[in-house]
Length: 213
Image (cartoon, rainbow, N blue to C red; front, side, top):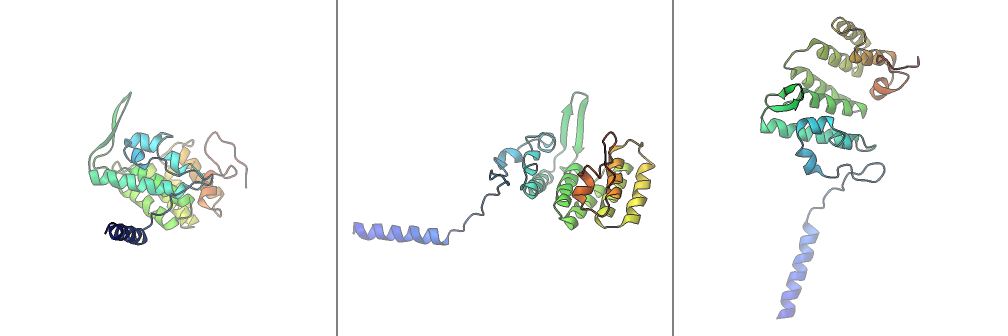
């Protein structure tokens, strides 16, 4: 009798192992380390730490091989904020700033979109950049022109890119960083966004040396 009970549980255990779904492999960086060491800790961070601190989302998408894992993390974190639906604030020495009244943060759309654009997910990136524009509660003209210039570059529409460059230049000083980025997109128009945005020979940000391509 005891033998029969033992065999029953043994077969039941084998059946459970055979039918249990296997978990997807943990995403690894190019160096073999996990892309995300502690997801729960990242998701529990306040917005400013998650977005701006090197120990936040940057610690994920900054690892070679983990860029899109980082983009997905930003997507999930932002979705959790929007579902919570509460004001997102941070207190600086100068005072408290509210980044979003209902959990929607324009900067998170931008940062996720930029990573996806760097990694060639162009359509997804453009959709996120448009959400960035739509969610801009302050209707800041310079932000809108910069985003539209970036979308024009991703659309390979040089005429639109030049038009948005002119619109941006009309509302910001000559040494504006975003204007320098747009000038880099123009200088390296035929190259991938990641190169045009950050390659040394494309860089037109003020105060940085660039090499004419």
